[in-house]
Image (cartoon, rainbow, N blue to C red; front, side):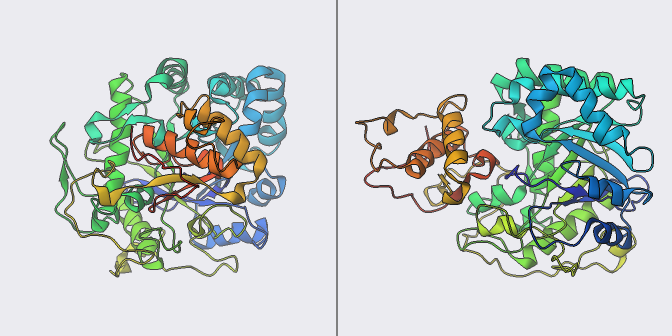
Length: 471
């Protein structure tokens, strides 16, 4: 998912839409040991009126189950294969032949995601991304599939240098010339779109003292006027997506469309995961479905009808990280709904949002005054720390990335320095992750590291070391 590359890689289903509006999909992750078979999943998707799915791998059992279903499919080149796809054109051709051409046209593959949030992947795959995308496209050309199958790559909102206000949206400076310009040129030339993962929950969870819950859940609220463009925003989701549109516009790529490949809200979380509850998840996803199927685009691009994919189809019991990571599902593994929301325009006719208090923590009541920006008040401080569940190898890779390409200030954890003790991998990784997180302005998705980190609202305690809250 957005934040945890996002280790989950999913099928996405699309819903019947209203004319002139957007479309809704749902991510189907498989990081679990108790899910129904692929055949039963396809039956579930069809029973819900689903017309489009996305898998974040190319599992043969899934692609075979989708054969003849009439459901359109998006597949993924996993992050660990991006290097090979970039360096060896023969690998890209072979991958497309085995995982795409071999299943078409009976399995209606319509898009390929090359990697997932590679900018926060600790394996330094960023510099190989665009070449991998081009090689995959060339392979599609070889098999005469390029006109019907688009190639893109999902990015997290942490790829933005600025996201608040929306009008100031811009991509990270160090990524513009080496990655974004060539990638956007490629998307333009091939008629493709930019894939974006956006999670208002992460922004709300970290800044609930200044972001209204109603604003985060698409409920009635006074709105927030963007000082840069004068537009009034009534949802954090719209503000986040318009920040991406503004970033595209700043580089003169106004013609590139956006598909929101992941968004969602957890139905359960740890005590410090403010807002994680069944009621809030139902409100976010249900109101998002209504918003997309009935209202079309965003304030900045009102005619840009969005395709949005909810995260995720099932709760996944083998995901690492905080409790929320295992509770984004719309369905339990037994295929019963976690909460009842509509997935189609027809279902919206009887939909009502049932308001309820926040669970999972407390928040201060505050007016709507931000669209995903970071709280500047002392009560809104958050830190990024390592999760011991990630494993030593994964933590070490993420630590190396944070102190290297990530630009974290790791001097305090060097031998003899103030935060060297306790001399443990988890303590050092936590300090490095937090340094990166704070330097990124605590932006959504910047406390991720491939699922090795998570946000906390209490100051971390590792010996006498003090973790900064800003730079």
